[in-house]
Length: 335
Ligand code: PSU
Ligand code: MN
Image (cartoon, rainbow, N blue to C red; front, side, top):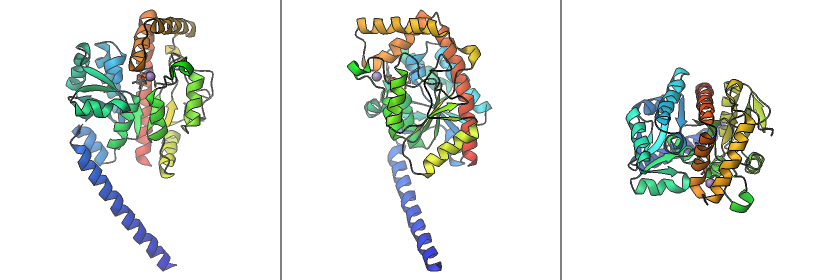
């Protein structure tokens, strides 16, 4: 029996050495592409909680200067809840993990001048190799979080299967990323600019848990209930952390989606949103808008048609997500 124990120990040692070697090799190969802020580096080194944040919100989502303000407020909420924020995006070809106010302001200005790309998985190598600027979407940010070793990522809403996808084939790269990258994305669900039941079906097919946070049905961004069930319900940050840890211990390589419903008092009225969405989708079809331009177009139009009401809801829910996401990261760092 001792002999058996010894063999196992030896095997583990070798495995550890190999893992260490691979990690350091990948690190050195990756390092030149990255600028990881010191605060984030220190937290990662000391196994302190970190929360990744995306920048498409800044570059293609919210209008200026609200975008920069909110990005900073969200970082502040992550801090107040005990985690280090790591806002992710590309500046002059360098992948930034953690951004200063100047970095955020720079990206916002570049957007105004039309010098910033919306970066999903497809676009990352192009933007980096051409030394361009990019706001990373959920898929782009998940990839980078994974490379940097940050398991929890907070955003507002994710992309999904668009309405009429059976004709257009427009399915967000966010869903494919959730299927293949083991990152936990904390969001308020998907907007009903998308086909929500098809999006949930797609995630089910591809093995991605859709967690309702303190609710049975998955949330739908503007409203707390999509009317469609989550795959499971969890009620506190610790249970979410245990789910992430178990997913990782089991060697499962896909991600997890946690839907935190918008607080009821900040919901936008469903009918008002639905009317705006119908109109925006019709306009997008008339103007033949497709590909990566579609989502930003719909978001901007819905905001205009609701006279800013949708942006208000967006602001409240992303802050709430930041709080819960930070709490999950804190619990995860204790496991
Ligand atoms: N949905 C929102 N707000 C957003 C986005 C989606 O409610 O800001 C952004 C996110 O960055 C998301 C991206 O990853 O749009 C999805 O774009 P597409 O549908 O082109 O995949
Ligand atoms: Mn798309």
